[in-house]
Image 1: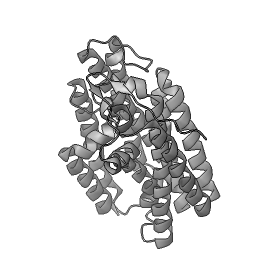
Image 2: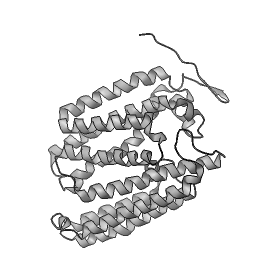
Image 3: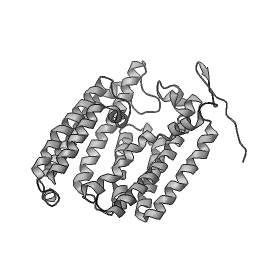
Image 4: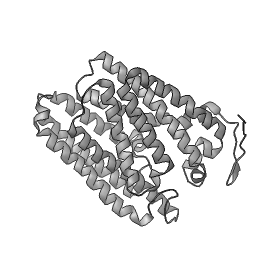
Length: 310
């Protein structure tokens, strides 16, 4: 194998590959994005199996496996999008685009993360391994092509979030209800639309006709907001129907207390779209929620509602 040393230049400064490598590596892995993989615990929690230590441990190990796999794709995506990221106001600070890491380091990291990720998955469960494999190839397809196709891209993002629920189901050995799947698809489609709407807002601020590598133009922003908001409200509607279904009575002693969840989710969705319209939401709504104190308050109230309904 021939080692190639890359020397790259971005506007206004020469790339520096001698910085804090460890910090750059952690940034490239995007550990903060691992919060998305907490969705693996949702089937376990909603099935009220948190007291099952074996399932809890299996899910925790699966969380690590899933996260390692996801990080390998993040790195590969950054390498593929290197040219586009350098022209982006915030993505230009990513380790590879900023020159903190060489491409050769990234090509080494991809299998270094991927192999243990799949190895752990194979040890845990063949069903979990199958779900993780589907996630990996779908994410790979998204990074290489699907993210450039309008509407298909946000649909794939919603599916990728939902796949995490199937992964958690395989680990906890519980069945995912149709109510959870319907709620999740509507909610995640809405959040994916927030991400694209924010990108279009940023493109507008930079006087661009469309974001690089996307299938949208800036005039699509209002339409995306309409579709995304409607999808978020459909998620709330699904939850109201779930409360009145026969399925909820077998899990909760006081199901009527779950009604408090509806206005909380309704308000959170409305607020995130209002802030996105103002350009105040990070392009990734999950990152926004992690930094938003009110989102933690709403999440806490939702958790209290579920606990009080038991």
